Image (cartoon, rainbow over all chains, first blue to last red; front, side, top):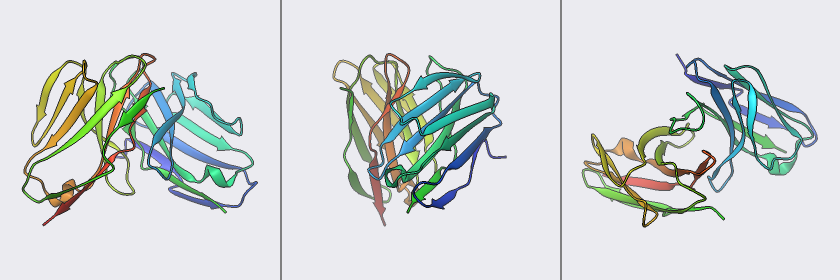
Length: 114
Length: 109
């Protein structure tokens, strides 16, 4: 059973389109995250939700909108895609927030904007 | 600003030992993590240090010196499957993980 699953694994789209990436975790964790990993391989936090409440919202264009319908799901919607949005997006989850909780990652969504 | 430094790439021989260093400057410190990431895959947790000293877990050990802002990951008895990127990440005062760019480890037979 996959602990953190995200779909799709690959996403190729045109500039200006709107797309969504879905993430689900079956670990019973309270906290979920979205990261962006760019071509230089840095992982940068975008958002974090704890029990469906937004707790981290880094400096991310407001074209990116996370939605957490329940604590097991955290989806990412991106409007008006730009070339610079091409990256690998990772979803992760942890037991809680504010402690040394291990983060478990999904397999990533490779987004290519043409 | 916050900064995590690690070598970009290292090469080692199967069966040998390799040490991957990480230095950090962050706003506060709530622990240091090491993750392994195989090409095209998700990062997976390896180790966590919050107190100074060495934590050993099988073939992998991780060391921390908070006063020096320094950690290393030691991999012994290297196997071909250890070829991967190794990511150092520090949890800052806001409990956010600040990530290094990772060290790509190449294992040669």
